[in-house]
Length: 154
Ligand code: FES
Image 1 (cartoon, rainbow, N blue to C red):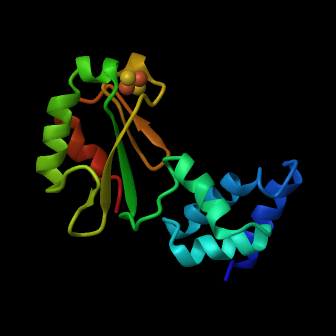
Image 2 (cartoon, protein in one colour):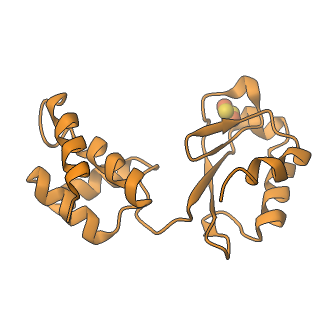
C-alpha cells in the first residue's frame, strides 16, 4: 500500500499535471525515492492510485531508464559511457570500479551497497569523465578518488 507520505507527494505532483497519465513518471520517481526500486506490486499500487492500468504505467517506466524495475543496491552508480567521457578515461574508470566493487554493469555488489549501470551523457561533458551516485554528480574523476567517493555511501 502507498504510504500517506507517498500519497501526499503524488497528489502534489498531480496538481501540476494535466492528467493522471502525465503524472505517472513523477509518481514513480516519488515512490522509487522511498523504496529504492519499482517492484511489480509497487507498480500496481501506483497504477491503481492513478486509475491507470499497470501496463500503461509500465510503459512510462520502460521509457525512462532511471526507473528501476529490478531491485538495485542502496546506491546506484551511473557511469557515463558517451563520447566525451570515453575520450577522457571512461575505460580505466570502468575497470577500476569493476575491480573495486567486484561487479560489472547491471550487477549489485555483494554487500548490497552499489549497483553499477552505464548511462549515456549525463550532461556534464566539461567535467568528463563523470559518474553519478544517486543524485550526486562526480567529475572529473581520477582512479585515486574512487575510494574516497565510495566511502561516503553506506
Ligand atoms: S559525455 Fe559524459 S557527461 Fe557528456
